[in-house]
Amino acid sequence: MRRKGRWAGFSPSAFSPWPSGGGRLTGPLLVGAILAMLAVVVTAVAHPLLSQHPQASSLATHPPASFSNHPPPSLVAHRPPALPPNPPTTDRSELATLAQTVSVEGVRRTYRAIVPLHVTNRLPLLVVLHGRGQSGALVADQTGFLGLVEQRRAILVAPDGEQHSWNAGHGCCGVAGSRRSPDVPFVAAIVADAARRWPVDAGRVYLVGYSNGGKLAYSEVCAYPTLFAAVATYGAVPLSACTPGTVAVPFLLAAGSADQVLPFHGKPGGKPPLPSVPQALAWLRAQDRCPARAQTGRDGSAVVQHWVGCAGGTEVESVVYPGHGHAWPAAGAGGGSPGAATVMWAFLSQHDAPAAR
Image (tube, rainbow, N blue to C red; front, side):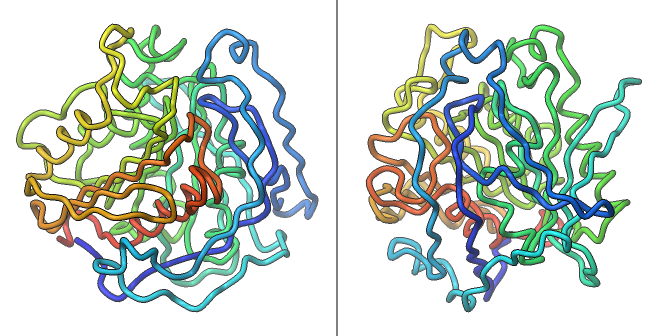
């Protein structure tokens, strides 16, 4: 259900370009380290797959992000007032950046965790799934969500896909798809492992996916619909609908109208076939049993559709960046819209786990 009286805007760090599995993401290449008290510079080197797959190609550099701490006009009707600005800290010694492992079907798998130190209250857990050709370390640092951890508003975890890819089902994608890597139980195992290690609020576990990782996010929520309080993706659509009767989950689907990797109108002849963004939204609305009529508006230049009154107090939202491609949207994308991290957190942070609905 929506969390009343909460709207958590945040100000992320400056951005820098990097190659990605779905375009170019932008973000700082500097993360805080624990114990050694050293800065770790992660430099993205082009993976061999990058020259072979269009979704891993490099795109134009985005300008530094600028995040507003008030709801956009189109969202004022259903989001509570903003919290006062709370800029991120510059002391990365207050963050623990950790490499963790879990065992899934007898195989050790890794994930990156960024955790604020000296926290006594329970925090939301944000699981971020990278695109093809990326890693958990890169997507954790450079999607714009790191500011939440710096401000002690969330714990962030980002797993690594097999050979920089995820098995999202239907033969997608890359090595993980061809080997049928058990990625759906892997993500669930990460949530359980993180909850054992750190002060996680079990009612506020959120899932974000980009490109190949977004497709996995949809498969994940079909298999574990009560595990996540809400889900948000960019550059991805579900490859099939969940089984009828699956528990309703709040969804935000963000897309670029000029995306050539994930065409807005779909790719019926693709391998696997890709539904259009409108078809994907129809599946999500059917799962959440939403009314047919949407609230519409704009968030900057982005076109927003919002379906409320869905089953169990859930909702579905779409955000389309006009003229934007497959790159993860920084602030100003699509001709002057908030970045994807801002839009997603504003949506995600309003929701509790299904048990609380």
